[in-house]
Image 1 (cartoon, rainbow, N blue to C red):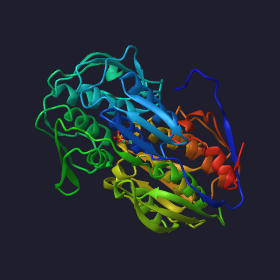
Image 2: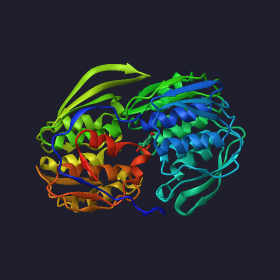
Image 3: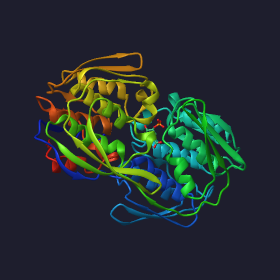
Length: 445
Ligand code: S3P
C-alpha cells in the first residue's frame, strides 16, 4: 500500500547507550475518546496532555464537522463545547478519518444514535480495513448503512437511527473499538445497552464515560471476559481529562533501551492500565531490566515512571490470551525477540492482519529483510533470536506507523543500518518520535 505523497525514508544506525528522561505523547485511545465524548456533552470539556498526532486531529476535525466547537488553548490543551447526546448536525462533506481506525469506528457509533446521515472515509490504509464488524451491530440498533465499498470497506454512508434500539451484543472478536461503538450508540438509546466480551479489552470507554457522568456497570463474564451495561440517554457532564503518556508509544524507546547495551532511561507518566500491560509482563518474563517507579493515579488511570536498562533478553512463549492487552505491541515485541536468545512464539495474532497494515506479514517481512529467521504458523509468529541482528534491510512500512518505528528501533542495535521506506505515518500516533529518539542518543537520519 502506498500513499499519494512522496515517501519520507529514514535510516537508523547502531547507536551508543540511550540515556535520558522523557515523556512520550498522550495516549491515542484516550485522546480520541475524550474528543468524541466531549463533543457529545453539553458544556465545556477540557483535555490536557492531548496527543496532537494526526489520528487525534482527524477526530477533532470530524467533531467540528458534526457541530462541536473545538479550540486548542495551548500546547496539548484543548477545549470542546459539545452538542449533547444525539445532537450532532449533519456534516456537509464526507468525514475524513485519515489513518485512524479508532476515530472512524467510534464516531460511527456516536453518529448511529443521531438522526443524521454521514459519509465516513479515510486514507488508503483505512480504506482496506473491515467496517462491517462495526456497522452490523449498529444496524441492530437501527442505524442503516446505505452505501459501502466492496468487502465492507470505506467509504461508507451511515444513516443514524431516529429511535435507537438498546441491544445486548456479544462481540465476536476481542475489539475495544467494536465495544465502544455499540456503547456510544447506546448513549442515545432508551434503557440499557449491554456489551459482552469473552476476553476483556482496553476499558478506556467505560472509565471515561463514567468520568463524563454516564452510568456504566462492569461485571466479570466467564474466565477472562466482561459484561458491560450502560444506562442510555444520560445527560453527560463536561469533564477535565488529563491524558497519560501512551504505553503503546512508550514501547518504542523502551525496547530500544533494552536492546542497545548500556542504556539507562526513564519514561515518565506512562499509563499502566492492566488491560494495556501485556508488553511489560512479557518483557519482564524475558528478563528485561524495567523498574516501575512512583506508581500514581492521574486522570482516572494508573500511571508510573518506567526505568529501563539495557538487558540480555531470553525467549518466551506468549499466550494467545494475552493478545488483547498488547495488540498494538507485537511488531516491537518481535524486534525484542530478535535480540533475545532462543525461540519466541507469539500466539493468536489473527487480529494483527486487519490493523493499519497486515501487521503479521509486515512484521515478518521487517525481520526477514534484516536477517532474522522466523516462521508464521497459522496465527502464530515464531522468531528465532540470536542475541544480535545483521540489519542492512530496507523495510516497507505500508502506511503503518508502528512498522516504521519498529524498523527504526531495530536499526539502533543491529550490525548494519536499517532503512524504513517511509517515516511519514509516525506522526499519526507519535509526533516528535525522531527528535525524542535523537535526544536519547539514537542515530536516525
Ligand atoms: C483501540 C483498539 C484496538 C487497537 C487500536 C486502538 C482503541 O483496536 O489496535 O490501536 O482505542 O479502542 P481493536 O479494537 O480493533 O482491537
